[in-house]
Amino acid sequence: MVEEQLIPRGIHDERVLQAMATVPRHLFVEDAMQANAYGDFPLPIGKGQTISQPYIVALMTEALQLQGHERILEIGTGSGYQAAVLSRLCERVYTIERLDGLLGRARRMFDKLRYHNIVSRIDDGTRGWLDQAPFDGIIVTAGGPIIPQPLLDQLADPGRMIIPVGDHGVQELQLVIKQDGETTIHLIEQVRFVDLIGAHGWNN
Ligand code: SAH
Image (tube, rainbow, N blue to C red; front, side, top):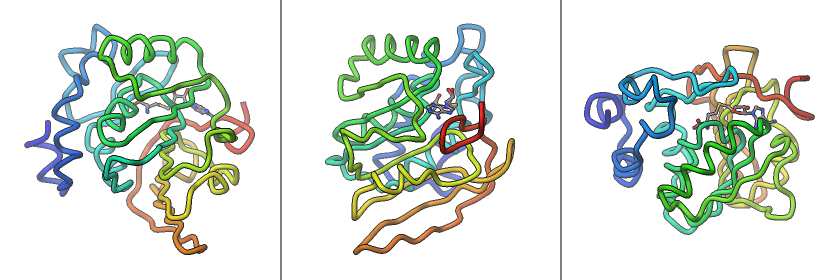
């Protein structure tokens, strides 16, 4: 996966490549999908949701430029795979999922793998996690129509946020950089994420 998919497409952060090589992706997908877990495509994780293709996980992770000391907020825990990768690269991951069934499974896997620097909760992640803010990095793994204002407010300065923004089924991956009191937005590439549903996302 690392040598055939990530390096040829330009993922070069050694720590990201190392984390992607270490975290057992097959444990985060449904049993019937385990043989395909390292393939170059997204996979279903139940409840109509998907785990991103390995390249997209790597691309979004690399965009945060993690050094190891950061506190990161993730919206959309899903299978827990992205949170697991982040947990190898920063100090603490705060991850929010709106669907109960998915979070239970992810939590059991964090325990089993002893990824103890991941904390999680059930909530509408478009509101952020106010009492733990600000965050050095924010990663949103579902696509909404706008960048939720609470997430912008809860991003530290300096801080980086990576988020798909656009329409149902197709979005532009945006990198938001906050530095010296200014916020700039960079377009990365076109992506396809499931809907971000919430107060600052799509309606239920
Ligand atoms: N990062 C995940 C991919 C998750 S798919 C992984 O590595 O597997 C997107 C997830 O976002 C889904 O589980 C969906 O339920 C969740 N989601 C959608 N809107 C949300 C919201 N407002 N708050 C929290 N989670 C949300």
